[in-house]
Length: 436
Image 1 (cartoon, rainbow, N blue to C red):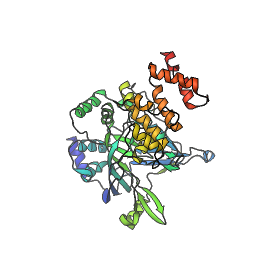
Image 2 (cartoon, rainbow, N blue to C red):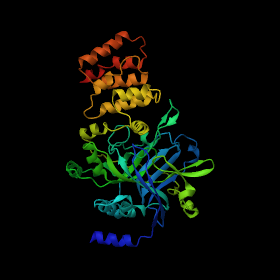
Image 3 (cartoon, one colour):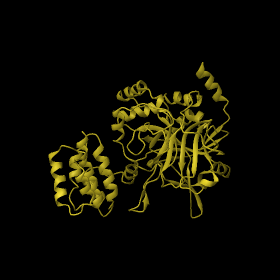
Image 4 (cartoon, rainbow, N blue to C red):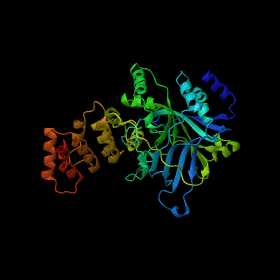
């Protein structure tokens, strides 16, 4: 009876959703499908509202404050300065309201087989109807169930905290921004709602070879999206060391090139706006994400969530960090072995020791990796300093290994500079044993 009522309500929704263009991602690390949509007549209950700073605080470094609302319920608080290469601060809100029929109906619709992104569009229509009118992108891609910095996605502090994945990664050595696309998650649901049995049910489905329904995410900035629905599915994927299939709602980027406005897709591809958007749709493109609010933002939610099992903590550390994701996208065909990393660091076609150092640490964390042998391949002084330092960082995590102990002693005896990072690693190699 309840589902029948919800279907009747959906028949009378006033929003109009039009597919403007289709796009298939060009990044090997982000093989995503995208639909560019015009959303009209929507109610605007899901909106990114912003608060103007008080006069006396204007000009401070973090003067941009916004809140993702669902109705009058804050889902996420954001504080940032607006620079794409600077981290934003995030704080959890009060969780998805339990009476949100749109989220419930989308969850039920996606749990049934569907054919392609166009079919998925019809199933997420109720949530699209919650948006502010405007131009949006609906994407299908995979996520990592972490915050982009090695932490389980649902294990977030209760206070405003900087998250590196909210920014693009600027490679100062090469003077470039690494490829950036949504692939990390921040929870919209309170951790107090965590149900281990529900996560285990999804985990059993994965073990049986079943494909889980995609989660639903809303893209923020950089690599980060807020998870609107599917927290327990993401938990199961983390424990089974899988990526999380996701449908993502985002706003397309815009950039001017030689006086021509281009639409920027989530994978960084660009299309001249005039090729796909009519003048009438251009007005929608200029619509704001939310509304300007006066006064002080509501207080941050508080509440003690679960003490997360060590299995979640360890699982999160195996996924790429946010800079790893950019490097993997930049070099999609690179073999993550000694030969491939050596080529990346020193070959004339690449000469990118910073990326090689990051990917060495990532490769060493993978299940079944021979981390010791991989790191030992780069300990000699002839290798770039940053790559050699990464190799010693990997070895430093391996205690009670006579060969590694002997190597660290050799560094202490023979290193001529005590400010050498490798010397500092060797000097502290036995410190953690004191507290065991």
